[in-house]
Length: 228
Image (cartoon, rainbow, N blue to C red; front, side, top):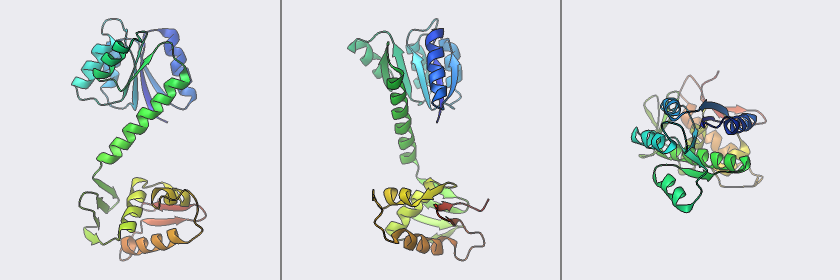
């Protein structure tokens, strides 16, 4: 699900949030001071940071400023008992991605965490310019594909299909996923369009190479990657 850093000095609040997140499958690291929280945040391993604004010593705003000053872009949800519009504006303009006033419901908190994580994942995916799997490489800017240094000529739909498979390399991709992600269908048209395009793509990326990369997972879908 993801790894969360919780920086909160109130033990009861921290226990409640941490327990609830763990029940939803998240891994939670905890810190009860700003300095400890900043230390944990700098390792870059967290998908989201929940940061209390009012902390002893180094407060939440100072932690936030230090994080952004160090170039750490991990999404931050600022928690605060200060819920006035000007307080929210100050928190958001200081680098927080979201601001949640206390008291709040856990359902609202987890909805905001998931939204920020989706945005971060989409942003990271959009920033990628080269996708690869084994000796197969796709340059999204030049729209060139190479395998073992050899050019692979693809039609537009084949390119889109391979891009989707590369973004899910090593995973089993179902027909439904391909229909939605490559053809923008949200229903099964009842044709063999996927089989035809996968067959054509397989010939282009695998023929002439000793190690096949595009595999059929019978009854499920397809997987891109060297045999395990």
